[in-house]
Length: 353
Image (cartoon, rainbow, N blue to C red; front, side, top):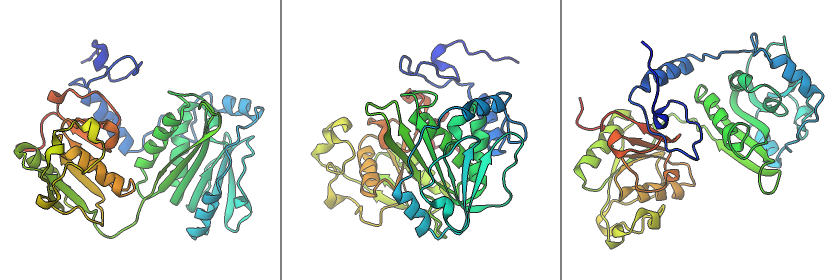
């Protein structure tokens, strides 16, 4: 059976996002499920033994092009030293001569040059640093190269790359998404992406994205925010319970500032009546689950108070900037657009067994 997408705003691909607001097609799960299954199994169309048809040609052409330097930061060198890493793999593409900041001379460091017909080095190392690499190969080969970096790292991956475009392919945001995709298959590995944004108003502006994996034998600390709304509270507690980590219920009551729109409140707890609410004291949680208009600013405030460490899951329409949340779980009746941090589900989380 062939399913054809005819409604432009419901296609599984999203061209011209600046012109259209996309909403999920009810049959899109067929493709997304197949994609998730392939991702979980580590499937890639190409790999180091079978790169894309253009791999050798593009790599050879870039041999003759001067590399775009992305300077190494002093704090990266210090981080490698502080981590006690005994082995470091420095990865580059053929023809690139990146700056390693002296790391290539430290004990336990080795350099691997990616070129046609050459396999990855055997075994794992503590840290993998890559420069003069992913920007010098075809886009079709980037997924398997990034996966190879993560597969060889015990604790940490750092990638340096120039961003040549303000948006889309080759932009800073595009590179961030590629690193996040690769990191999902290696959840124990921390990573850092250092970008020299050549498309910024000040060319060469440094942009950094970083995710720390904290090894802990303890289950994540979870707060479930409830405020007396029966439907929202039931969904919050249902999800918190389903995670299986245990959770603390934080009951919220509000003052007159709750009448203000969330766009005015932002990430704030100023509309919370402290005398009638649970205390929101340190240590801040690893995860906050909230639902409804009133608790959304509080969840954002908790994330801000934790220095960005707390992850925030908002159920239903947030009535606030999507940027406040790591994940928004929404049903079709809320008619939220497609975004990277929006998960569309078929029905509310509570009341279904």
